[in-house]
Amino acid sequence: MIHVLRPIPVDRIRLLVFDLDGTLIDSAQDLCNSVNAALEHVALGPLPDPTIASFVGNGAAMLMRRALATADGIAPEQVQSAQFNAAYGYFLAYYREHKLDFTYVYEGVLEALAALRQLHDDPDGVARSMAVLTNKPVGPARGICAGLGFADYFVQIYGGDSFSAKKPDPMGLRALMQETGAAPEETVMIGDSTVDVQTARNAGTWALGCDFGFGPRNLMETPPDIVVDSATEWAIALHPVHAATESQA
Image (cartoon, rainbow, N blue to C red):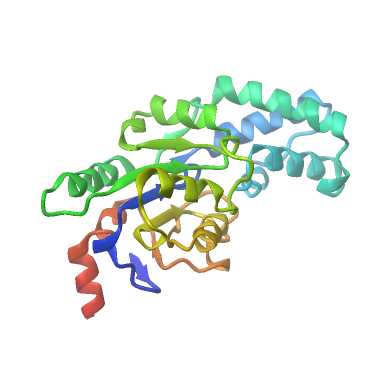
């Protein structure tokens, strides 16, 4: 179901920017396995998968720091640098090798991206670009998009180490707008967590929330403009015909 909290003028949208984890893909199992492998490497016990999944959204370093703190029963800021460096380095190396063991594309994503591309290619449609902006390191992010066969849909794929600041800092989103020539009011950030909505708000863009991700389930802490329950609804929510119908309803 599509929940419109504030209508987006989709006939003017020129740039769609997608989060990756919990939006395009379910990468939870590979992330959890990698975190627990890193915890074992520094002689700490494993954490339950749901606990680790709740730490996703603010980048790999924060994911690992929160996991170390929880496994050790301390606050994240109390994690020692030597322990963090050892665990984080191991996590990155392990995840690099295992990032596609269990990760899969959410149902409806490929069809929705194809439909959005078709709308872009329609001579009577809106000239749009699509990109990915994730807090995951850019190397694994691009490898996953390529490995799962949808990298070609995007003009750019940026990660948490592509800029000096991660989401919700608007730096990456503003860079994508500059590269594609889209104004904030012509841009939609699409993601499953409050981090993505805050990024949109910080950059002055629109926000479409995905209520099906595996992360911290905090999407409505900063309400987006539109919420969808499935990736299959992206093309409907962002189609000018649907938007006109919604505005008249």
